[in-house]
Length: 426
Image 1 (cartoon, helix red, strand yellow):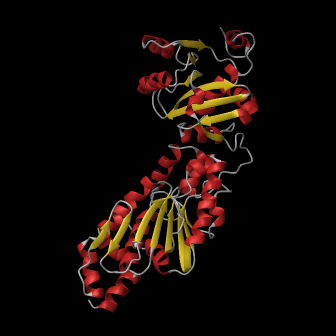
Image 2: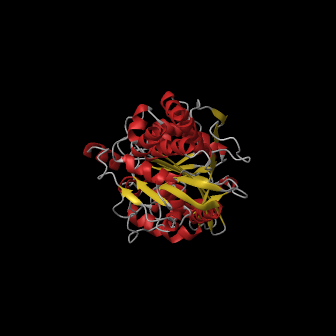
Image 3: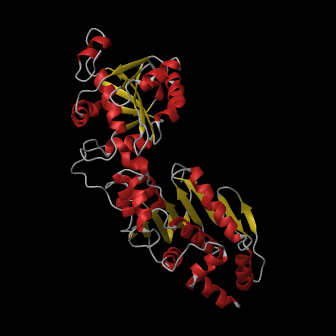
């Protein structure tokens, strides 16, 4: 194969090249994705469902840019520094593959080798004067961009679940994306692969994306799609697989306040909404009231409560929380008895209030005062933000509403109010 044939093969038949590398799950659909990333003019956004191999296409594209355009400088960005490493590692693996070395030999007449190979950087012997910048650099979205300039910039899921639940995170990601425009060299391009998390997230600043949802690609069977749908909340499935936002008309809890100091919940009170199998979650909440504010630490496990009892006790001790409250409607006091055997102080109550009314009364009424501390599960917050009367899962909002009700209006003592509130018997 001569030089021209080698270049044409890589540019025109990138999926065949990927198959040579062992990336055999790429299909004809992926060829145009890779071609647009490498050869397209202007900024480009791709929105494709989870498990559509879009990040694999990014890895192949990055390797092709390093190989075919060695004078170009490329930035690869993900949400965190740790997220970057797996893609950089895959690019290095592609460049060291014998097939890639063969094509480099055909094009340049040299044996391709890596002259820089770290967790976040790649450089090859195809370029000699790099002016202190390697051909490929990977960073997290929180890293400094000052003084950097690139010809190609790839962002891969720099918008995630945190952007859905935190306005502060959405605003931060928008600033990062705006800065990327400033460090893009004249004639350069930004390639974005993303998921629709929030109507006002950084995607609103990006070019209108090309969309491939789970029904269009043919990569998932109908049975697999139904299994995915059953395994997560409606909004998560809509965002990750249908590439759409759930309509917000029936949203009850929006724009949660997050990121407070975890010390704010120390010596608070705890609540468990227990799962005993099936599709339910076990939700664990620690809440401490300070003035009008409710500081909350929440965890969510899709597990039987027995499987997380030790973790709950560990967390209760870690935060020096007081009693653990749990209802006995479903288990006749089983959980309380088990926790007491572990030395825990437990208060049992029999729930008599309608769940939807409880959540929309106590939690909705105090939502403006609820502040989640750092370390709270994203999925715990997400389940609350997804909640409506038709929600499939309500474990987190039920647990939080129960403990907010407990702390809602103290009289002379917490215990007197505890007994007075509806649904909280002595």
